[in-house]
Length: 218
Length: 218
DNA sequence: AATTATTTTTAAGTATACTTAAATATTTTA
DNA sequence: TAAAATATTTAAGTATACTTAAAAATAATT
Ligand SMILES: [Mn+2]
Ligand SMILES: [Mn+2]
Ligand SMILES: [Mn+2]
Ligand SMILES: [Mn+2]
Figure 1 (tube, rainbow over the protein chains, first blue to last red):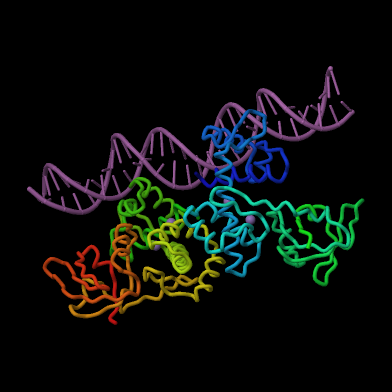
Figure 2 (figure 1 turned 45 degrees about the horizontal axis):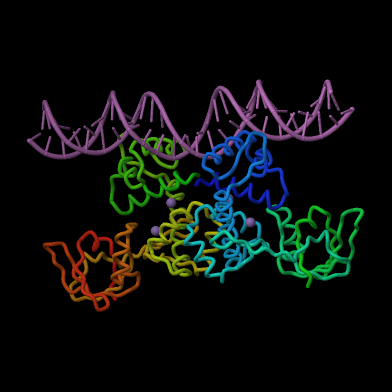
């Protein structure tokens, strides 16, 4: 299957995970940076290949086959991120960009070798779960988003759920890193902001960021 | 530049290295598994991009720009081979196949990180030289092909110059491996065959193989 | 509920990288 | 050196993955 197809099913899969719904072609198009027309075309093509169910004006739904494909690509992406992160001194965002390409050019055999080398990790350096070779995911259901965290409580960062370059630059500048700890010093409930203490810094984060930073009680 | 273009300039470059000449579209087409017509089309397109010089019915000649591109792709290919060979238990041919794809999806930055990690190696696991980031190659001019080796002499294998799956399967089965040693027990000059002693085995190789196995005096 | 705004789909067209078939040039060989 | 064989080029056509512009349907607003 082509790179375009792999990216398309992956985008649908991730959309259904995160954004609750709106898996219509237009929204997928926006995420992939292509036109709505291109996304509609692709949706029809993938329906013919039985990777998804398509009905005019309805939400796109991955079939089991489509879901398997998405999980296989995501597995390769996250294994590459884990490997590059471990081996090389590169920013999380650079690593993500490399993985975005490498994920499509990696045999199942090589993916398995990488997984083995890393001791079959269950999470990548963003805290995102790595599906196993069968497409099974270990979910971490103890995590909550920073927006829901309790004042005065100390937490460990368990997941940075984003692909955004600016976000990761911000993280890098503020020690917001997978497995670092922080303390929630104040929740500004009305203004949807959260004040945290991380290292020796006090930072106030708005909802855009507190909704994608996940933490575990320590 | 696209994968097709990168593979095309690489094929021309390698052809000029090994096969002395015949760098007409037809021969490149054969190596890439595409039609002659496709190769002619591509040659014209690359001439427009100033990657090569094209004149009807003449040999294709890479420009400096085209050579640089070829060397950059070859660098990435061989760095990946070196990395995968070091890290994972995979056959040389499997490694080659992965590298054939990964070479096109690797930033210069990542290539440099791989090179650094490996201690800037000058040779890949086949003994092929790895160009540096500037496209410079360290040539090993002490090596000779097994077909030219002296009877009774012991050598170290310095290069296996092939992409062929069967050849590498043969090598794997007979301990013919980069940096292994062997002794030439007999040169059958008339029949263009060479008898070698490697490990506890005696093998007679024909010219197809002795011309692509390079050795250094030990 | 009707109008307006937004989204989705269809239609028509483009670039890339191929194909096969035919025309043309080059190379071999008799 | 002329005919035959081979290789290269041109021409016409295909699949993929996009585009923009328009028509059609859905969703939001008054
Ligand atoms: Mn990523
Ligand atoms: Mn991708
Ligand atoms: Mn190789
Ligand atoms: Mn390649």
